Image (cartoon, rainbow, N blue to C red; front, side, top):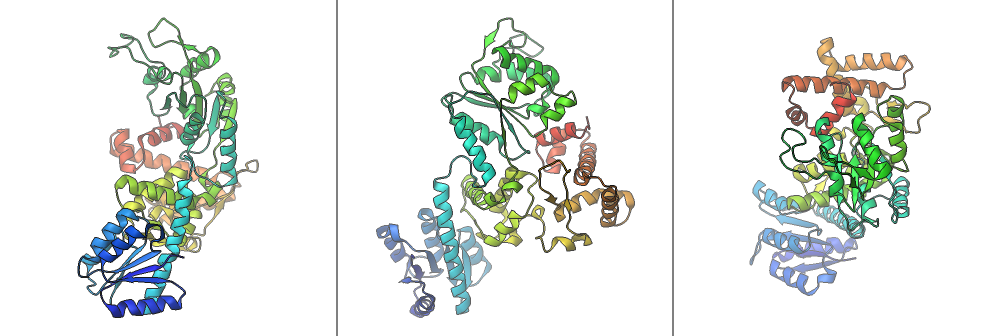
Length: 502
């Protein structure tokens, strides 16, 4: 094991810490100032410290200056700052510089040793995580369901066959599509993505197939569509289930004979494009409902890859969380934060309705908002909710699980406290009393009726009321309503369609 480096111009402090750490079988190395530490790091780079414990005020340079220089070359090294001047400014400066913890003098020796041991454990855990991430592919996952996806990508690596990717929103369908492209014979060609749910119906045809000059009002020049842009490469059609019915016919024609026309054009264009489609919807059910062409479904459904929801591969949450924390820190130009085992455990019991995208957003939020370098359960955002032992006390409602239909193979999903609160808020205005009582009465009535879609029913009502209210407050302006709700423009458009609010 690497040693604990102690930096302090006070010999008594060094002596006390050395003896206490040696009793715990923790090797040490001592320095009197920051210059000695930097020289040692230069000459002994391969065997640096496991943890650095530094005084804040020393001759020849402060501990904060040393912290800054060390973090430039060793960003993952836990640094504990000691100071006899335990004021707020020093603490804030230490944490802004990426310190692991702040230790005011005089300190309780057993507590100091425990803190250093915790930093050692964190350092060792981060070393393992960094080794994994160094060899990480563009997609992460050790869960059996994800390994099945990786194997399928490998089998399809030399194929140009059409692929249909299914999975819940936020589960990473575009990442799978990019991986399929990257490992295909078309890897040197372009990868072009289009979300068919995000583009108005009257513009989608032009987006896909392009248009000739003068084809319609405003078409002042010829425009290449996504099919032409993806020539020789891959076209990813996201949310294909939302494609208008008449455009489905045109897409079927391209998939059938490989030819299409620009809007307003008269010359046939040959398409050399591999199509990968994705949807969060049940296309078979949409075919039965007459909303999706059966012949197009069979054209797209040559090879189907189902991407599991994050709650189905909870064992991947630790490595994903640490990966996203690294990514967020890099984007923001700050020191990556670490996450404790207790916080990871809390994340692993959360249902993640927004899947991997929601976890990524949470990690970005933590990078900005978590007060210390080590993220604890109390630092997690409100939507993660209370732990399993605490859920039953929130609003005096028990934690329940909504059972899926008997024919479904989807596991029961725990109803988190935050979801109960959000749904129940809609009942408060209508019954004039406690929203808890209103929700409880409605839930009990639905449960007693023998229904197996209580979660979906209450969620649908809640989302409908919330979106309608937001649109009313913005006089129908969807983008502004989405911003006020804290969701994306594509999300509110899809929800309006799914909930029949058009």
